Length: 324
Image 1 (spheres, rainbow, N blue to C red):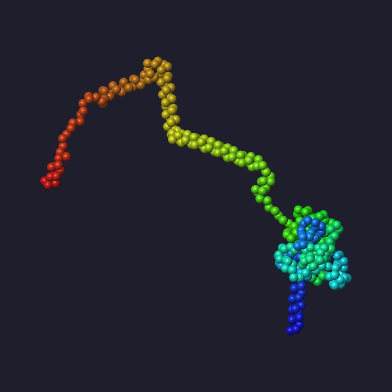
Image 2 (image 1 turned 180 degrees about the vertical axis):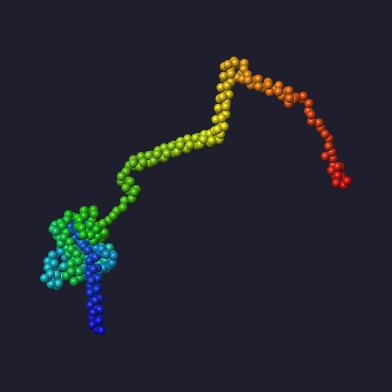
């Protein structure tokens, strides 16, 4: 039973150590300013060199008890832990700001003394020289993160391109980001972009007039085409209402009649009025034939229909005819 408890305790201790070690890897040196003359002031109004530490994970981790140093001699494995601690500055306990939440940042002032505040560390930084900075875990042995800062101009910083990224860059004075993310994506509105590109409004005026004239031209073309279409539609209806065959036959017959009358006039003169003599002969012969056969109409002018009186409207007859 005791062996089992010892084994379980060992496993728990090993697992917790691995977990904390993994969480420590999410703590990064994120930005450094070695020559601060007018950038950021501490609570005493002084401009001191500062180091920014970032938690790049999405879990909370307290960095109290970790060590910060600029002394490369601590990398010697032969140095004892007490000696190494003397050459480093500890991040003190009792400061709630050391409990870094997800994606949070913390600024630590250097070249000071812990007596000035919990975030003031006795870490020596020379602004005119390259500076190595190391962040150690609470055991003062494991190196969590480190960076070599090149000589910087006044109020410039040396920062990761993006929080937790491998690449570092020198940031100009107007791009330093103490206490916030190193990469800031500023989105410009369309109105602001338009004001920047066309401050006097000439471009938008030309664009507006172009749109208006284009719309007017489209309306002109539309109504022109619409009117032409309606005109031809009515013409097509009129043509479709006429029977093409009959119209053609009548036209041919009328043309033949006119041609025949013209030919007769040319032959017999204007007295014939274009009427063929054969037609006169045929009409006279038909009249004689009807006269001989007594089928010709006799226009005497006498009405042959005689009136006949009836009693159909006499009331007496209508009432008594059913009683005989």
